[in-house]
Length: 184
Image 1 (cartoon, rainbow, N blue to C red):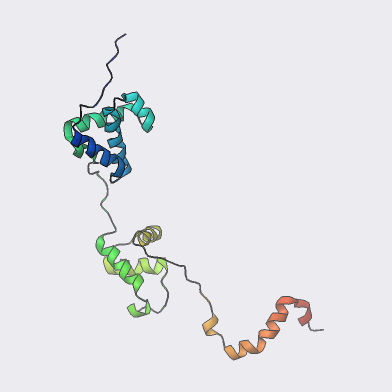
Image 2: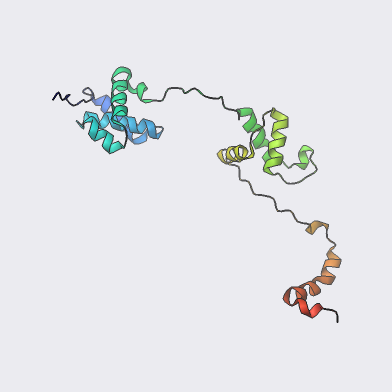
């Protein structure tokens, strides 16, 4: 039976070990920290199967990361740009959304006084020509640190306070015992 010798990363200099430790502890994201940990463990003479067991990943991924590091150094531990759809919510969109939330709808010429996600979405779409879903607008608001509270619509400002005060006692009795108001 032909067994391959265990694979380890090349011997690291003290500067490289320090940089790997820095990335392992304080890397910008979890993927880079995991890759740095792979290099660190390999330099400590852990085998590929042991590293894949410790990190909970495929042994082929460990091989790929070791090869990438040996060929490209620290830059190879970072993600390459990925293809995909361009971001729809541009910086202009976000700025317009933040500006709208900070202003009253009345100040912007609308007949209502409270923003809803539907209203915000429509307003920003008119300004930027970008229409996003309501859930995406909520997500962007959260990312921008904007707190949003659903409006509670009430008819309280429309009622006559004097007439309401006159019947308040009658309303309280009706709530307690509806039978006491029955006309015989």
